[in-house]
Image 1: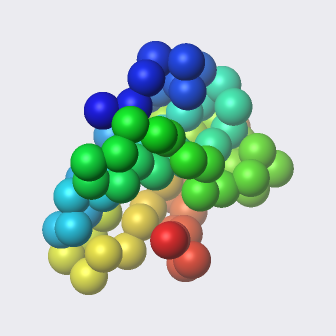
Image 2: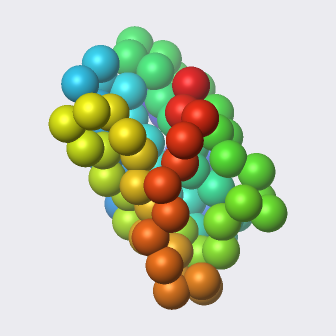
Length: 81
């Protein structure tokens, strides 16, 4: 699993059918992705794309959804690596 240094107020995680882990990293306004077997968390969104992400979910089709506290909305991420 990824090291603690990559995280800044992680709020929620989700795992897709390929075992990729997604972390809502609230204080950096990013979603981090961790590939299976990796110890590196990589930002899959830019800080300007989200505002206070605190929830993340993956549906049966592999679509990623993010609950944003700052924008009071649920955003669908369309280009997830």
